[in-house]
Length: 317
Image 1 (cartoon, rainbow, N blue to C red):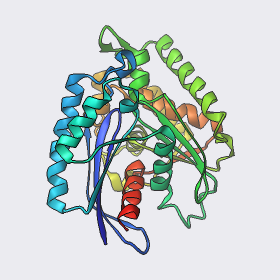
Image 2: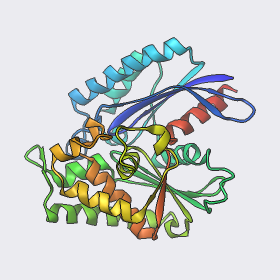
Image 3: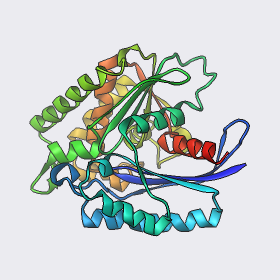
C-alpha cells in the first residue's frame, strides 16, 4: 500500500484526504477525510486580492491538517489550490504561508487540470454501472468556478468557467457588505443571466448535451442531496451516489432563494459555512440541468480530492 495525503484548497473550503492506495487496483481506502470552511476567496472577485483574515483562516486549517498528516505518516503530500488563488494578486503570500506550515508548495492548477482531477475522482466508482449511460458530464460546482468535463473512460473535453457559489453570491446578492435576505427577483435574474452566459462559454469547448449521465460534485450539490432526502444530519454514505430528480432540484432551489438566512441555517444538514452561498450554488446546478435536459443528477462525494490522491500515488509508485 502507498499512503498519500491530498489537500484541495478552493474558494470556499479546504479539504484533506489521507488514504492508502492499492498499487494493483488503484483503489483508495480512506484513513481521514475532512473539510473546513475558510472562505479563502472572500472579496477576491471585487478586490483581486486574498484578504488577511481569509489567509489566516486558511493557515489555521493548514496547521491542523499538518498534525493529522504527521500522525498518519503519509509517504507524500500534494497540495492543490484552485480558483481563488489563481485570481489573486497576492497569491505569493499564500504560497509562502503554506510552504512554511506544510513544507510543500501549493500547485495553483489550471481550470483544465482541476477538471481532469474532478473527473478521475468522480467516475472511479461508477465503472460497471449498467444503469448509467455514457458519456458522463461531471460538473464540479465550487466557490469561484465550475468545471465541466465530458468523458467515458477518459476525459474528452473540459472547461472551467468563473461561476461558483461564492463568486455569484458576492457579485449579485451582496449589498453594503450584507447578503440579501432573501434576494430580490432582479438579483436572482442577474445571477441567472451570468450563469447562462458561462454555460454558453462552456458549450464552445464541451459538448454538454451529448452527456447521458450528469454527475454532480462539491458542497452545493451534496447539500441539495441532503435536503432532498430530508436527512436529519449530513450523512456522506447516503449522499454518495444518490440520484436527485430535476423536479426536486428545481423545488429546492426555489425554496432556498426565497428563504431567509435563519431559515436556511435551520436546515438540519446545512453546514454553517454554506448558509449564505447555497442558493447561488443550487441555481448553478439547476441551470446546468435545464441546459442539457437532465432528468436527474447523480451525486458523488468523490471528486477532485480523490483525483489528487490517485495522481499522488502514481508519482510515488
